[in-house]
Image 1 (tube, rainbow, N blue to C red):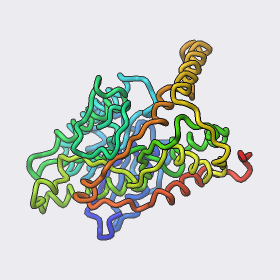
Image 2 (image 1 turned 45 degrees about the horizontal axis):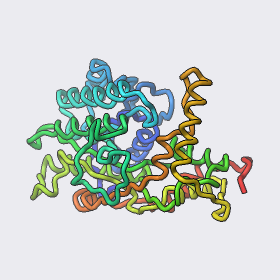
Image 3 (image 1 turned 180 degrees about the vertical axis):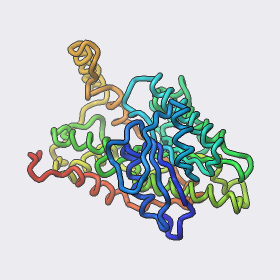
Image 4 (image 1 turned 90 degrees about the vertical axis):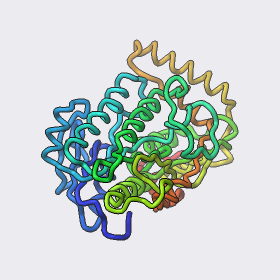
Length: 365
């Protein structure tokens, strides 16, 4: 986090009981001097921290937001809330990610919030189908039908809402979007799913030749970028940037760990760190077409057996992403935010995998 004294005096974390939001709260409390911290979440019974003010708030309910904001009165809002990306529920995504974000923006502007930082996604500039190598911040946001994933569509709509809400004067609310690529971390759901597959010996098979690279972002590095953006927005209220190309207000920034890695190597390293090692000599490759066929059959079997109430863990979307190349170039974040990953990819993998390590668990040879 920033080495100098923080400019953040009070902060509100939307979704602060979720994985990324909870970590954001933890890191806020490590800043010096320690800011006043509040949390909005639909339920605040889990991941609570002493000396933090918690409010049960449904962000799709504008009255609830306004009432809680009047009580918490933050200078900075960090918006990290979103339904999981693996669902197939466009109305839910639009209601929470879009309508909820719009409600937050309108209430925040009315009540004098100074800075609003939205955690978007790198997927908003990718069609989720084709390979992408070193995509950068010059790429436009993509929406349905050019965007094939409904989650990413909703995040792109919300992303643009946040940027459009940026004030044209420093006296108003300044906004920015952080667009991380594939967040992972200690105790994180995605990391846990990777470990689960390693424990089941699934990484002895890979789809394709395993050379497709992708970018991941350790959650502490995402939070570091959030804080840099917030600090820059607060500073811009007093010292506007000298040139447009150094503006943070009204801008989005792709964020990664700045180290490309093969998707399959990353997954196996996470499993190894958790104690479920996969020997390279045991790995066998399966053509992508066969993997998709197996996934399609699995989806239909699970759908039929559960009368449409359950979804297969093996699915075509997962197969598609495991074979895809998707890397990003983050020069803008480095130049404008001064962003540099605080935790290297290898250290982050080791820490994340070890957080799921269980000595008594059966290991895969």
